[in-house]
Length: 323
Image 1 (cartoon, rainbow, N blue to C red):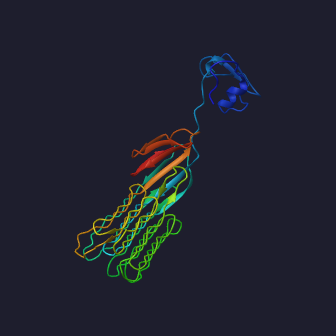
Image 2: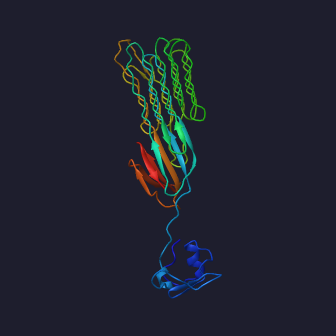
Image 3: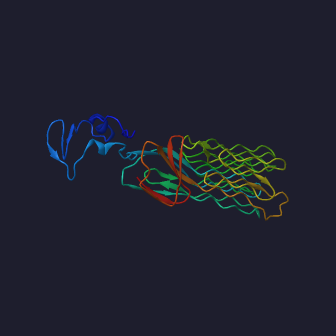
């Protein structure tokens, strides 16, 4: 807390605020004494106790930050397609050094695909942070005629025929996609950071796997995309922004800056020209206690929030920060 603006000041108050311990135990004009030696002369000018009223030492720099790194989500498959898998998610604590610069790279989501002939979804792109490593892009969903889903941070869902298995997730980053049904267009949901994608059954598709809630923002990220099904209410994306499946038309996209998977598309009349949902753009977030000073500098224009006792910097595009 700041030194008070009035009232008695003690050497202990000043030394505690400025982190000097008991190094300085007397000020006399232009000279000072330590507990073991003196006098020493200040480099310039006399210092009096009045100089300290209302002042406060600069806040220290953080020695570590909490991080969240999420890759771009995969897009859903088109024509009996499976849901797109969420981008891989990495979270934890990173030790940082004052004066050092760290680079955040944010991966894009997989593009939507057209239903003509059946097309597998496209994987999302990787995200990374210096000192942490790389989060793997989410896997694209499977499609008609046995086109299998892709593996990824979380795997894409299996297409709605042939009892097709979902794509595998990356260990420590996500989960597998759901299995497609054996006929009738019930495709599997894409895997999410918090849960596997749900399986299709008969003509009913599986919903996307749920995402992960990061405690420092309180928000949920990286949900899997919903699979397609044969008519009726279409499967939903997983919590955290997964896109909904669609019976005809364009499926739901993964929510931007969550790394969520896109929803799958079922071409209701086999005419082509309909699209799956795109995967959501990834994100990199760093957070640390309010008791520390702001970052020295940033590039890439991250957003800043002061919430819940934390300073939070959110990168939605590639950039850097210096401690």
